[in-house]
Image (cartoon, rainbow, N blue to C red; front, top):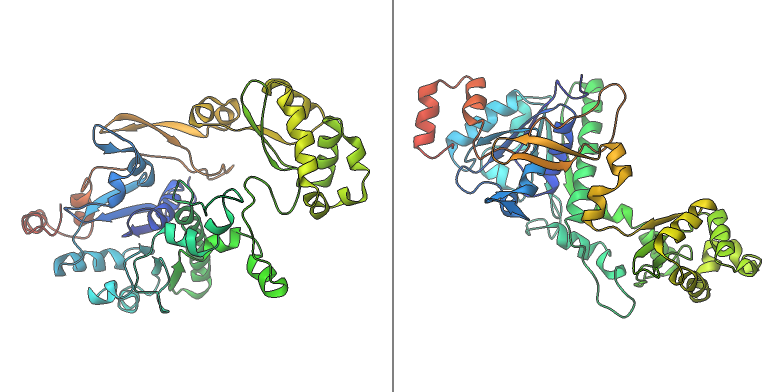
Length: 395
């Protein structure tokens, strides 16, 4: 049994944040119906690597979703969405504010049709405010949150992540918000509207930077791989050319590391007793750790760190990730049968549950793969489905 098997979700969002929230619900059994434009499809189909023109990012992002191609800008397409909304628990959308209203699909109208519906609205800047009408993407959130300003080398430019970081964080936040709304519905019997701006969730991961600015006037600076909270914390190159990362967030770990690298004298210094004290002496600590590691091969360094129970990890590229025994033990990656590519290897569900585990039932499907099935389930006869396809409303 899966946790969300009795839940129906309409994924009318595009690209990454909204669809990733829907993916997480589908991973644990929700019946997710992905709505795409019948001619353009979701732009995420064209992102990233592909095999024979079939996008691999799409295969993961749209796994466990039935696919219906419907043009929501047409009246007949809007009627299809209304019928779906009447029979669903959640609608996820990320159109610009005012778009649903212009299509006669305003949340208030949908809630009149189905008072138990959760309307999850995800936009770059939220549903109101001076920037709400602008197009918003995760890159803008990474810029405006302060993330880029504090990422990179001290003498280098602000640095954006090479992945959809803010979108992924927003997707996690939205899946949580939906579950909170569903829990509230158990008590009240009513659905509600969720307004999530992509610029907001990433702020929470940056720590109390606004609190520190308001109270102390602190503006974070770029520190590369170093931390402003503890030291030593960096990446270090070994004698055989590999890179390792270490963390000393806990005081006992910091003491073990410095003792291991032959500098127990530093542990005795009064400033060593706190993370902030160690940060003030980061150059001295880093030099001691870096020189010790540089004189040894990676396997020896890792073994010595493990002996003293200090935190260390090799810096992997994807080939290392794919062959790592810990990931293999966790079944972090699974081979999923696919009607287009035969088999697709992808990351498994995010966590393991003892009684109601999630699973990947199928990868992202071809455009319109389930349109007929979805419409038939809404009571549309075959001849009406054919007419809608002829008119370009569906594919």
